[in-house]
Image (tube, rainbow, N blue to C red; front, side):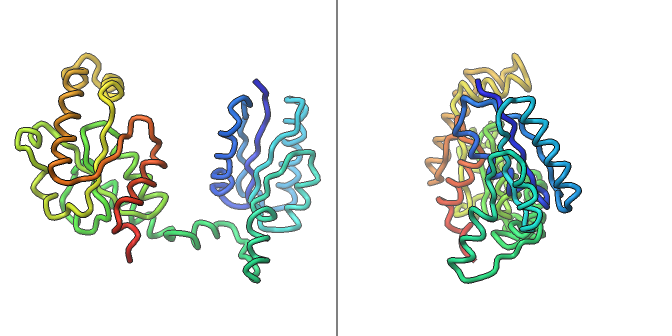
Amino acid sequence: MINRTVFFISDGTGITAGALGKLLEHFPSTSFTQVRMPFTDTLDKIKLAQEAILQAAEVNGGRPVVIMSIGSIELRNALKKSNAYFIDLFSTFIDPLGVELAQQPLTGAGIAHSVMGSKYNDRMEAVNFTLNHDDGMTNSGLEEAQVILVGVSRCGKTPTSVYLAMQFGIKAANYPLIPEDFERGTLPAILHKHLDKIFGLTIKPERLHAVRSERRFGSFYASLENCRKEIATAENLMRNAGITWADSTSRSVEELSAIIMEKTHNLTQG
């Protein structure tokens, strides 16, 4: 296993630089020690970053990787005097795009999160909505929901809903399918007029058994037999209601969110 240090250096929060860090997942034979240095927006802070890069190189015996999102050309050039491998958001992506569009790109901290996609206030409003409509907590304002996730307890509805809200500003509610719904053979009555917004999640019984056992070990709720029965009944209920669903067993919230946004047309309307 190769050991390398990767620095995420930004003049803002570093969220965009962190997103570029997904590139590292393509190199599983390397163990990356991650160092995050947000708000590196002065020459003094650049010098501190250079010292940290030098120290990491001495410890690992190899050049650190620096993933950077710094708008100031002066600060960028100063940092690049360090002996490291640089992935520079601006010089690699933003500046060439500016040339193609014949426009001078904005370089202020936080630009990526205010220009692209939902604005900050929209995302925060969506997060508040989603948290207030988690697990069928309330029916008030449900008509504002852009998507409603349904599925058995512990199949991934909450993290997926929160990701949709935080990343895309989507107001996502979620409802658990419970024994009363299975006995009735229908969705909760409040959801009947929102079928066009509903998307289902399912999960493999073995995985659900493992997840529930962490919470309530040895209970009937967590038993493999009950998990199998609930999932089969839930899938049949969703099938009868004409609801599209996705299996969350081996999918990340990012993948699930992409599937939901692709399949649920109303998310891209307006």
